[in-house]
Image 1 (tube, rainbow, N blue to C red):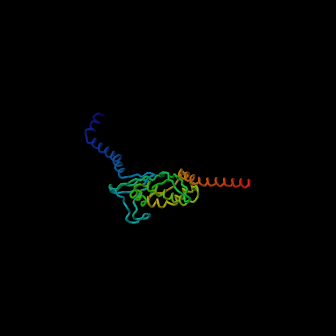
Image 2 (tube, helix red, strand yellow; image 1 turned 60 degrees about the vertical axis):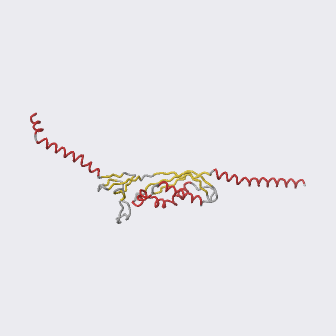
Image 3 (tube, rainbow, N blue to C red; image 1 turned 120 degrees about the vertical axis):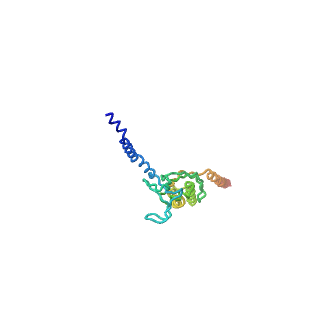
Length: 236
């Protein structure tokens, strides 16, 4: 038995065993590892812009369902990375919320209102929109906030009521007013605008009190004159 084992290790059988084992390990470990290097997996909640040498790959000819000039975009799933010089810039497509700073808005009747608002948004997963989102807009939330704030100001300015509309009504109006502009300018989808606060400002309350004071003095003087004239009429 010992002689048999010794003969196995001392002959070409050992070389054959090593070669066979190496081939098996190569097939089971090395080949899948190399194959994985040529595969990129895009998860749910994200998309990817295909780029080469740091620049996006843009379609030069229209294809079925795609327009010329769009950036190549990958949907969730596994995709081949070939050639090696092509890679993918990932984009988070989950919904995000951004708060706007408190704004003092003046209505058409001269009333000032302190308005707090926020908006929910997400990138649009198409080539043209993602191209704007990733490559042409540096501060997406800041630019969108300016557009939403301008629409909110215009709606409040054109409202002649002494009080602002209900929050749900004003939110829907702002969304309708600027959703298309936000997508075209920023490459994102504006999902909702939430008006989170509404209060009269101290400046408006003070100005109202000051303007009401002379009217109150005039009313008091008129009442005193009426009482005096009635008294004089009785004594006469």
